[in-house]
Amino acid sequence: MPAYTVTVSTGSQWFAGTDDYIYITLVGTERCSERTLLDKPLYNDFERGAVDSYDVRVGENLGDIVLVKIEKKKYWVHDDWYCRYITVKTPSGDYVEFPCFRWLVDDKEVVLRDGRAHLPQDDKTSLVKQHRQKELDMRRKTYRWKEWQPGFPMSIDANRHKDLPRDIQFDSEKGVDFVLNYSKAIENLFVNQFMHMFQSSWSDFADFEKIFVRIKNTISEYVMQHWKEDFMFGYQFLNGCNPVMIQKCTKLPDKFPVTNEMVSVSLERELTLEEEIEAGNIYIVDYEVIDGISANCTDPCTLQYLAAPICLLYKNIQNKILPIAIQLGQTSGDHNPIFLPTDGQYDWLLAKIWVRSADFQYHQTITHLLKTHLITEVFAIAMFRQLPAVHPVYKLLMPHIRFTIAINTKAREQLICECGIFDKANATGGGGHVQLIQKAMKCLTFRSLCFPDMIKARGVDKKEELPTYFYRDDGYRVWEATKSFVSDVVHIYYTSDETVQEDEEIQAFIKDVCSFGMQDFDYCEFPKSVKSREELIEYLTVVVFTASAQHAAVNFGQLYLGMYPDEHFIEKPVKAAMEKFRKQLAEISSSIKRRNDGKKLPYYNMSPDRIPNSVAV
Image 1 (spheres, rainbow, N blue to C red):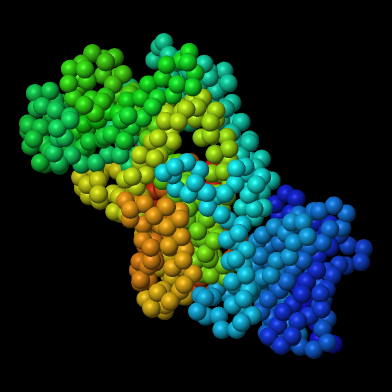
Image 2 (image 1 turned 135 degrees about the horizontal axis):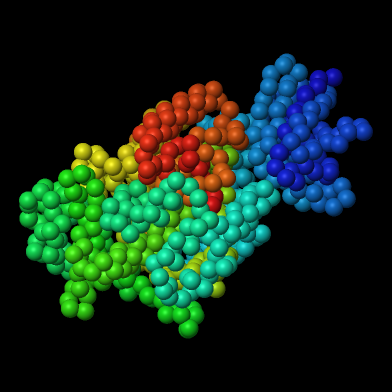
């Protein structure tokens, strides 16, 4: 009697094992096996981290094994089980791998395809076509779009983290990490002790030092010593947490009437302001999007304010970026003076602080929340709805959307909701943050997510003009390495541009992002289809880069770029492409480390060994 050896791998995360009954059915091209209970006498099956093997005996050969059906039935009480993969050894000695990487909850069954990736047009038999369509039908019922706020990107239809499908919830360890890291941050910043400082006026600049008292590292101590100085203020526009605002000034806007007489004392090349602009030495930062946003008024005892400043920056002969003029509002006039370095010490310092305050609001709400978290969630939901697990793009993207929907749901539940942390700690709380995202959405385009385009659009793409813009330099290298990896994978499965056009699932994914995720806003300019391999490569590079490198400012406790412990791909050419990608990333990390050696302000945010795979914090 022929026997098939079935090897089952249980996840190693907390509570992954189960005491429930596990049944298996092997589906071949010729026939199916009997439904078989996987159980060994006097043995505790399916323990956390276990790899167990079982014999499945059949009357006749099943042919090629194309599907494996796993069923979980209650033993005493329902006991969730996380299955990593199943391997089937045929009577002839061949091995067939069936990646799973999902939870079986309640009395659930899962039907798995073998681990080879297939485009929809590659499937020829009705059996695999039906399996593919059934999986997508189920996913579309499970992963539904919902508008959390008007004018926002669409999000998952779940009010609470516990309402999410089990497969995309935080696992127990990640949930504990989330709580511990949050608690540690609160402890480090003495937020409980100093919360009143955030909700009332500060009386002394020395109050800032109290925030740093528990953060002990070389960079923070250096920043604490120099935060009042102009060079530090300018440096943060290049390599701080929000290095996406600075742009070359080719003409002073009428609303910001800075004259040569005002700033001539700050210019070092014996050129007029107009000549410095023509020479490419003047840069500008404009927070116009904050103009008109309502300040936080949730606490009537605490007045809070918002500014929408414009800041003029100068590249001096040492290539340092220095502020030379600040206007705190968008309309010029006597009520809105232009502050200069020649003003009183504290007038100038306070003007810079207002710019930093505006930068914080922009960074947290637009750069971070909107352009990484919410946008990546759109890609993730569309992926689950339109791409089955056997699709190569699903396998490519899955590591990069891990826990994104979970963390965003937590944010809507605890952080940006009414009476959430934003309302307690941010000047845009109480609804201003919602207005800000609604306003920012009107100028968010697909091209603004393409790193090279975003850099070039701001006129800061030339290294010789801004030699210390490490965010740009490191970002270029990571973008190119990511694009090279994506290109390798795409070319393995798509043999021509026509193959891309004929892939109904990838076209549905692209359309779902635009028509539902971005609500088909005319101004977003997201593509509704892709017509070539090059277009698909760029699109997928945007997804991976946005979820990893662009979000790398927040970086702890995660899997890093290029690390794929869940092996969704089993084909050797893809594994070779992954290894090539890892080597490229390692070379970039090494060169960044060499560049940073000896620097008082090293820049590591784009170092691949510190870039998380996904938006998960």
